[in-house]
Length: 127
Image 1 (cartoon, rainbow, N blue to C red):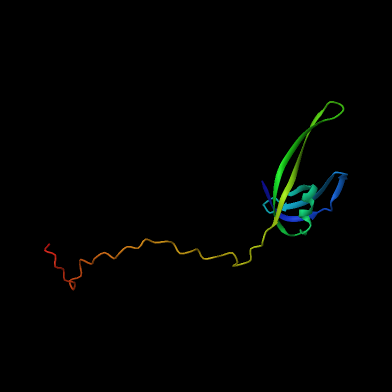
Image 2 (image 1 turned 180 degrees about the vertical axis):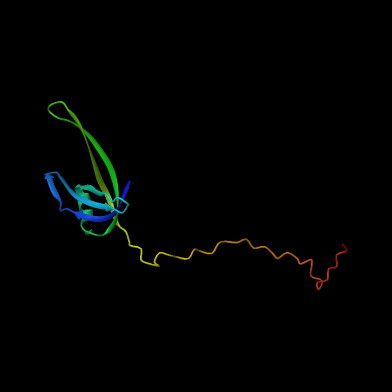
């Protein structure tokens, strides 16, 4: 899955435990009702966010994760998270840029049909 939009926030890395770290990215989608999507990058993927800044247009490849947890009272709860695993900058399209003329269409080459109505041409055929 992918999320496309403008970077709203890039958080610093958080060391959750000695063996686990995460970093959060918020992307604002560009649609009629923009959504602010929180995406987590974990472990070595935290470094992917080092070169991204607020305001840049990005495409983020994500995995949607869900888990079940039962509390001490025996109640089961469900949680979802969005984990990013790749991010790329989108190049803004400038006016006139990206508009390329399509390549010419291939056409079949046929020889011109003979002109039977032209009296100047003499034909030796008997019919």
